[in-house]
Length: 193
Image (cartoon, rainbow, N blue to C red; front, side, top):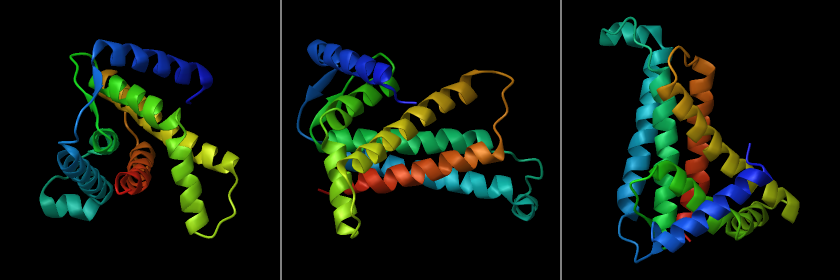
C-alpha cells in the first residue's frame, strides 16, 4: 500500500535525486518511444495470458506445457513503467541514473503528480465529464489507487522475478494485466492534455 511513510520516503528520495541531477527538467524527446514500448508490453502481456490460459491454443501452437503467467506479470508491470516514463517525459521530467531506474521513476511520479495534486485534479475533471458528482476525496482515493497499483506491480514484479520458489498463479497474472490496462487508460489521458 502507498501509505504516508512511503509517500514521505518517495518525496525525500525525489528531492535528493533532483539535487543530484538524476531527475531533471529538459525538453520532451522520448514520449512516443515510451508509449510504443508501453503498448508493446501490454500486447505481450495479453498474448502471453491468452496462450497460457487456453489449452487449445497451446496445442495449436505446439506449446503443450507453456505457462507464461510469470511473464504476464512482468510485461504488465513494464507497460505501466513505460507509461509512467512517457508521462514524466511529456512534462519535461527526465530521469538518468545508474541506480534502480524503476524506483527513481516511481519517486518522480509520486513527487510530480501525486504530491502536487495534478493527478487528483485530472480525475476530478474526468468524473465531471462523465456526469458523476465526485468529491475531492473520491478523486484523491482514485489517485491513491492508481499509485498503489503502480507500487504493487513494481513490488510483485520484483518478487516474482527475483525470489526463487514462488509460482505465479493465473489470477495474479490476470490482476496484473487488468491493472496495466487501467493504468494505461488513465495515464494516456493525462499525457494527451
